[in-house]
Structures are given as structure tokens and as C-alpha cells.
Image 1 (cartoon, rainbow, N blue to C red):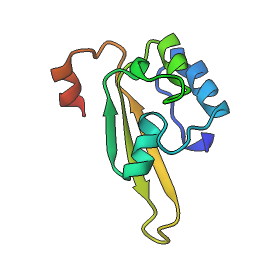
Image 2: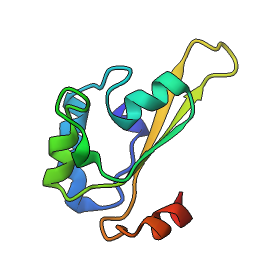
Image 3: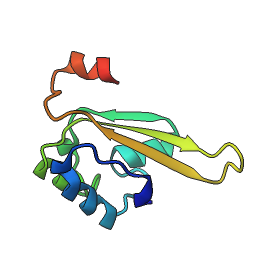
Image 4: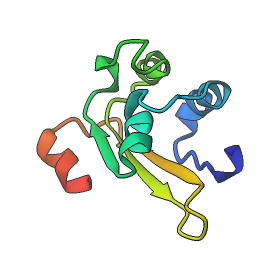
Length: 103
């Protein structure tokens, strides 16, 4: 589903490419949690995940990404298609209050 992806910061394009090569399973990382709950999930530090919990956390660390929000969606027409939108907060957004204002 790379066509449904937008990378606003060209310095993390390689991160997107790494993510495209590896798929997260339900329950892995913030995306996997959103799949399980079918709702929004937030992590203020993706580096806190173990590799078994989020195989892509290493890549996020390499590119200086920390905070992410994932939102689970379900197709209302069929109910059989699930999607997750994941957003990484700006790299310089490390203050908890600032994160809350964005989310």
C-alpha cells in the first residue's frame, strides 16, 4: 500500500522504505495496537519497544523518530477491511504538553 503513503520530510524517506519491506503483525508496535483496538494509539517513545514488540523501532531510532500516533480504521461498507494510519510527530516535539496539543 505504498501508494497510500506520504513522506513530508525527505530525510526520513529511507525509513519509509525500510517500513515498506517489513510488515508489522497485530499487536506489534503502535500500528499493531491500533489494529487490535481499532482505535487511536500513541507512543511518546518508539525506542522503548523491544525488537519482538516492534521490529521497526530500530529504524525509527536511526532516523530520530520518537513519538507516533496510529489510528485504526474499518471499512464501513464491508466491515472486512482494516487500515491503520500512522503519524510521526515532528522530531523536535519532545515536550509532553506539546505532544498532547498535537494529538
